[in-house]
Length: 552
Image (cartoon, rainbow, N blue to C red; front, side, top):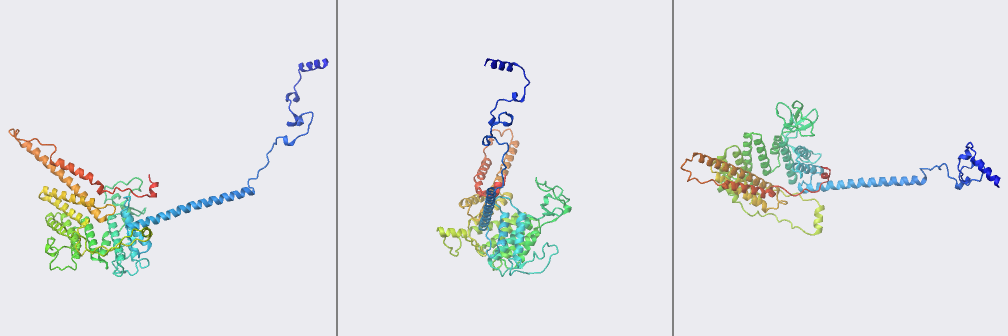
């Protein structure tokens, strides 16, 4: 036993060359590489670590069915989302069309697309967001008139009164007058509205040019050429300015549409009177005074059509209303007022002032109560009737008065009286008595403000509201200018008097007060302007609009 221990000690202390067996640690053979050990033992496969992984099938039967199911769900959800979005867009479109129909009624016998042309043309002229698009409104109204004259669309029974072809017209026979006497009253009224829209649109796009090189329509103030030596700069983001040599007139003149109205057979006297006055105002704006005066005389002849001229309603020479002829009709009042305005704008204030005074006197004698009309239908307040009214088509409004009878003193007529007082005040202030002119101007402002405060601005008649607002804003502006002018004149007079005064006038002079009459009245005008701002401007917020979500 001792010899074995010594031998083992000698064996450990003797240096030996390291071999593979001496370098390897002592490991258990049944968990390591068994081929390196001397004593082999049986392998246990379930205890051995696999050196390779088994292959996995990506497209098994179950996975293929799952992918098909997910694809079907994706297609179903996508189609449902876009389908709901499309349905929502269609619903929103028809709701907007119904809102426009309530605001701008159209004749029911027209086709749907023709009615949409009229709604969109009116909406482009007076949009809610204030972005007026006169070129688009004119294009729509012009196309609407062509549709109403086309026998294949909505012009069955409309005949042309002449076959004359204008070689310069873009569309042959577009401005030839028609015979619409065989159509219904609603159809004729809608046709008149459409052609008047086209005429007003042509006024606002008068002189616009089309660039033939780029097919772009531009206002005349941006054109670069000899006729416009100082063109207006192009707004940022717009194409560069067109050159005059590359342009042509883009739209026809408004004269064509007005002459077509005057030559069309089937319009009432009131409609022709309105068209004549609008045409005369347009010619006056174009500085064609002779043509405008001739049209004003034509309007007077149209207003007195069928009237016994043995006792005319006005003096044919001075145009002052005749008190012995009784109350004037609405047509006579409008025509004579237009003639007085024309004379005042032409500088003939001495001839215009008596006409204004006679008009104001005649209007104040008008009846205060409305004339008896047909009994209106009683409004039902039941829930079923309200639901039925919501989903039913709105009735086309009844025809307006023909203008052959005297009007009554409605809010619109009272604002017309205020406008007459305003014009009288301007003439008196500029010609004879400044104090009288200032007094008439104050009265006009008081009447216009009173009428606006007594009416519901959300449901009031648009014509009455526009007339009262225009009269109030113009009256306040005139009032302020008159006060400033009078204050400046008084200041000059005081300065002149102080320079001419001698030494001995020192004890008799009175010191000028800072808060004099005109300074106090100027403060009153500013306060009235601030107080009436809510009456002149529409402060109601706009309704919800999806397009506003995509604007900055």
